[in-house]
Figure 1: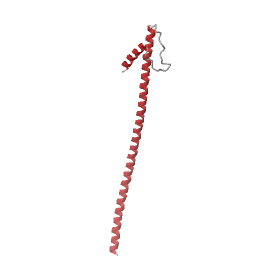
Figure 2 (figure 1 turned 180 degrees about the horizontal axis):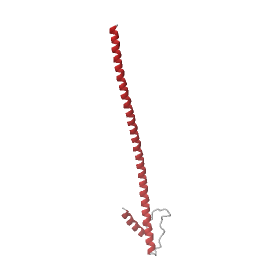
Figure 3 (figure 1 turned 120 degrees about the vertical axis):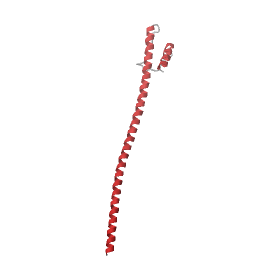
Figure 4 (figure 1 turned 30 degrees about the horizontal axis):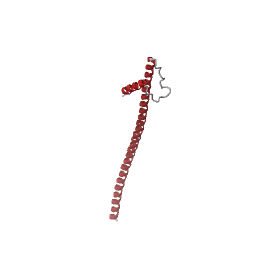
Length: 125
């Protein structure tokens, strides 16, 4: 992909038609058309500047992807914490339920003993 762009860039530079909107500090100085070396330096500078801008675009895309992944990770961590909190509450409620059932069983047993004692008293009187 970069090779195609570079060959297109070289063709455009030869024709003098390709001049992207570069920042002043990366824009190549116009070549001296009478000097073969100046033209080569100009073409090389254009190539390097184009590669530089492609890398900057890729960095921007990667930074955006990084932000997306961080947001996704934070969401997963939040959901994990929510799940852990729910598991903790479930364990606490299960224990409370067990304790209440045990208390109910003890109360039923105590009530049954009291009924038996009451019936014995009623039968004795």
